[in-house]
Picture (cartoon, rainbow, N blue to C red):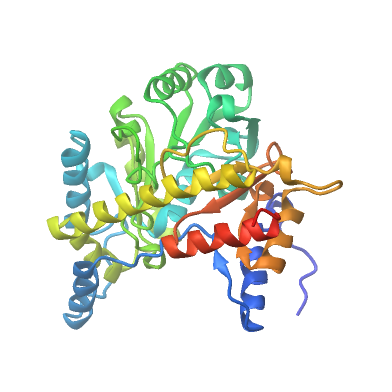
Amino acid sequence: MTFSHLASRLDNIAPFHVMELAKMAAALERQGRHIIHMGIGEPDFTAAPLVIEAAAKAMADGKMQYTSATGLPVLREAISAHYRQVFGLDIAPERIVVTAGASAALLLACAALVEKGSEVLMPDPSYPCNRHFVAAFDGQAKMIASGPEQRFQLSDQMVQQHWGENTRGVLLASPSNPTGTSILHSELAKIIATVRSKGGFTIVDEIYQGLSYDTEPFSALSLGDDIIVINSFSKYFNMTGWRLGWLVLPESLVTPIEKLAQNLFICPSAIAQHAALACFEPDSLAVYEARKSEFKRRRDYLVPALIELGFNVPVMPDGAFYVYADCSALLKDGGDADKLVKNILNQVGVSMVSGLDFGPYTAQHYIRLSYATSMENLQEAVRRLGQFLGKN
């Protein structure tokens, strides 16, 4: 059956090129090729042992019924305690809404705050789904060119310059996908103050916040009770397929978001919620910290290796597990980053993604590499890239 009419909002939602590259890589693997995956941002680690045990116990005990739309109270309390332990912040459990992944959290926030004609400021480059969440509710993401001089992030000056009549808020990510760069605390404070003065909203995606390597981590929640923060069990806690995240909301938004969650999602996965309680056990936290150190070790190997190969890494990534590299010096006549990553994939079996997904400003000359794979794979990838570039 072919539908004669589809919603016009689909015209504003582009394909996810990361997933298209993943399909190309999978097709090569079916042909018997060995592919090193540095495209999709998924930890190569799985859930910690206690988390897996907790999931099995929850199933054995029959704890698979619907939960509250806002999540298990005991899990909301555990997340609140985590903010107290790590950041010294007292976040009331009632302000925490557990969601079906960070994607659901962003969807709920946009459903509550974005309407037709709403404009939301975000950096270019940024995670592509963020602008599509805005488009899903007939809003308009205003992408602001953000280069290495700004750490690929918005600055307060840029927010003031681009705030217009229809602007309703900003959507930031720190550390960021695709760049692995964070917003400096002082700059974020100025951005929030500007947005607050204009009566707008600030949403900060902190799903990589647990993977901050060079400075003491901080949460935007330290800058006021009116900030909306997104987080997830996917990255630091290595639970990507469990689809579990959370929102921290101003008190006034909890009831509206709960109403939306009841209707759109019913509740997050019960099994995932019971399992996630074990994330905060001391033994689990020790596992995550050791894995965080391993991610940093990989970053410290990969960035110099890429520079040696001729890539330019203008800003050292301080978080997440991505390197955003300028490949301009490696492009041949008529080439761009997208053609380069496809040629690399086909010729030497290393899967990466171009800047095409992340916004037009860096699309042609940047690639994103994920180091969420083993050190052995990274070393082999560098060897293959050297072969492709004639460096070996």
